[in-house]
Image (cartoon, rainbow, N blue to C red; front, side, top):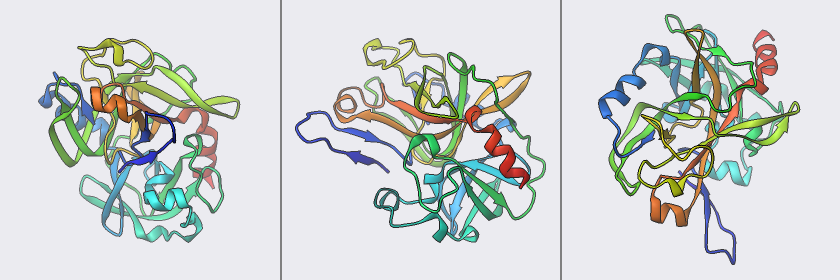
Length: 287
């Protein structure tokens, strides 16, 4: 689902894929599938509203899931603000972990307000479940502000695809867990608690370095960009032999002119930076 922002008098149209893994054209599908199905990522589940798939979420304690607030809203509701978070019924939402369904008992947004903030920097929600989720390895929460330049793995549900050399999808599937890797290229966004609250990376092409928007123009093995349904999914890195959660997917962004020429190559993804919000997360879980 795309939210298109049109700027009159400019030939380039920017867009964000809010409900929106797409991997490089020379990717190994079996290796990507093995990565996504790893036990260490069982903590990533499907978010549902009245049984219908709406996005992803990450289990951070046996009872709490961290996701993106906008996952609970449709595109029309987000941008017209016709739907208030206070109007949502927690019981309408649930999380699916390995085929087991857990109802949402309580919704806690970072802003604590009844309305929805479309700002990337505050697109964060905690979902308390009706019972504990057992037998799933939980990620640590990153508290260090040293994410820049580190290799990460993104995991979520939704559209999975591999592009051709021109960046267009040649293999596509939906409703499955997908994963891929990248390097944190930039700290961005407005400051929250005195720190940039967003992590960014771009999707580099192994054939065309010119499409690179930031950081190195040389893609890594299994480089990817998030895709449809990954919103609310997690960005992980290895620390001390264990996976830690460093980001929650908000969106991807690019421009139509680049997409026309290069397809998904050159796309930039935006992740809410967990390290900036760990105090809020821990205090909200205790309450």
